[in-house]
Image (cartoon, rainbow, N blue to C red; front, side):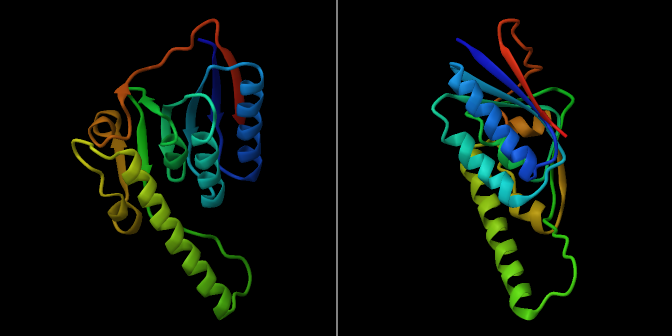
Amino acid sequence: MRSHVIHFTAPINSTTCGQLIDKCSQAIQQGADELVIKIATMGGECSYGFSLYNFLISLPVPVKTHNLGTVESMGNIIFLAGEQRTACHHSKFLFHPFHWTLNGAVDHARMSEYAMSLDYDLQLYVSIVEERTRGAQVPLDVLDCLTAAPRIINAQDAFASGLIHSVDCLGMPAESVSWCVHS
């Protein structure tokens, strides 16, 4: 099996979204039988996180994701795109309420649009987490994490809540091809 390993150590934004799509596309063009995406991110923009999730689950090869140490916020959505998900023993996942930065004056119509979009993103996030962790021993109350009580989840609790399938350092085979996305 020809594995291509992509190290994603960046915030989630338009630039890194494009870079990850590009690296995955190149890996598949070069004959990758599977993609392993090793992630360390503090999160980022919702629109690009959801876009990357949809892109990754649509790929024609299996995608595995791995938490290198910290996966936070919107990074959880990208992480959950993995068919097989692992995390190092000393890693964490952070779930917390959404926030937006607004610059300048905002009229009522625009504020309503922002609130509607924020609510939609919240429900989409919850749906993805529930779908990808269905059947977990200890289901995660992600809606509570996103609206009231932020939560850090260690590797053992991530296993119990279905975020990961195993705790593993996930070494890199010598014959694998390596790519990087960072900023």
